[in-house]
Image (cartoon, rainbow over all chains, first blue to last red; front, side, top):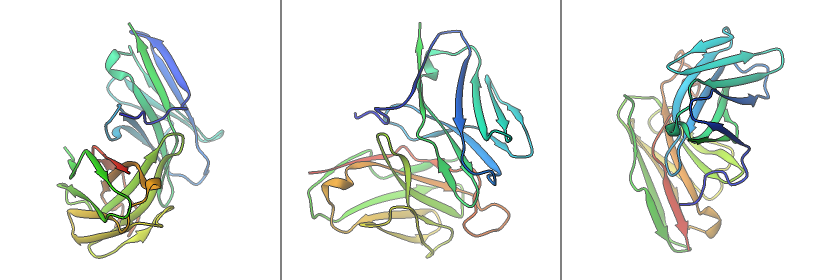
Length: 109
Length: 118
């Protein structure tokens, strides 16, 4: 089927390496942030979230870092696996969710 | 686990046809949403609903309508499909945060319906 994001920035990593995906958000009043993973032909899948009163949150193999000073969010994936290949996008929440356009992660063996 | 289901994965319709896209969630969420997703444009909100019978326009409501007769079901209607409505349509649901209407927590998405209008 048609690719979700034909013109997305792409991050290519080797299997086993760590991946860092970045996101700049727009509204300093945003109080809640979410990272989603979207595999080809599927709906977005929740990965991890963070509230604005935190600067770091860890999940299983994933860590989200929030820098409110520069309005920047990052998703770190440890020991990247082929199954991590997907489009990743962040969302920021004020009174509604605003989604970024995403980054494509490609994992090479 | 939250489960959001959509009635069709792939749909092909002709220009001028009336199209119904159905979405059902099983987590008793108050909020439900319809988005379309196009290459390079990301997710754009069409309509959302924060309660039964309630609906609010999103960023691109033109050419669409919605119906929420039951809490678990949210329908998107294309009254007269056009070729520029060819897209991936995604439904999502979320709990209401803090009891505030329209303010939600994490949104959980369905698998999407890829609609092609010929």
